[in-house]
Length: 172
Ligand SMILES: Nc1ncnc2c1ncn2[C@@H]1O[C@H](COP(=O)(O)OP(=O)(O)OP(=O)(O)O)[C@@H](O)[C@H]1O
Ligand SMILES: O=C(O)C1=C[C@@H](O)[C@@H](O)[C@H](O)C1
Ligand SMILES: [Mg+2]
Image (cartoon, rainbow, N blue to C red; front, side, top):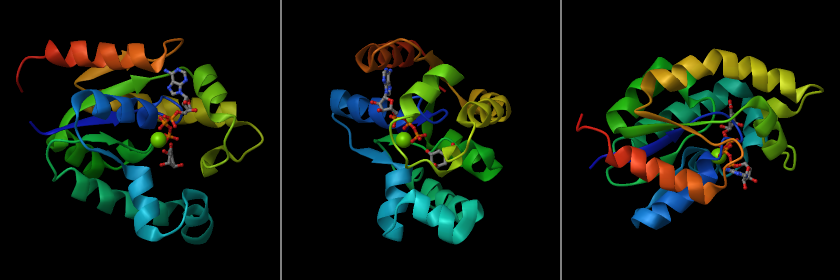
């Protein structure tokens, strides 16, 4: 098998669901955001402050290219990973892609408690999330093998649905 890759917006649950899926499938788990932080030795807000979003996106592209060359792991990506066509191509090649969908209201609720998302350090995070979703939703769908709704559904249920939906897919 190749990898199992989760894409979707901030607060869709990619990191949370990815960790649970990996445990369930007894596969290693990697999170591109965490990988970037480890390699840089700094957190994401620091990278945005010092290198700008552009600097972060360069680091993200390098990490995604490398992780997508691996096999047999669950990979959670950052919410903006689909913005670059090079990343979309790498993710498609890297394995099965699952789009975790969440409404703006749910994203807002799930991201309101922590401060590690620089794009949401704004007076109107709902507008930012809405604008980003309008641009990115077609890109998530473009590369997804399956789309799974996460609104009002606990992580365990989302994991179960992903496993069932992947099982039902014809071979690529
Ligand atoms: N299905 C769910 N139901 C309820 N809460 C959830 C669900 N999925 C994730 N959460 C919670 O929402 C918060 C954000 O989840 P998580 O960090 O996994 O999102 P993410 O998609 O990885 O976001 P980012 O793109 O910013 O990395 C966490 O506190 C997590 O516990
Ligand atoms: O949606 C985005 O562009 C981002 C999402 C996070 O996962 C991080 O990758 C970073 O905060 C940017
Ligand atoms: Mg995450």
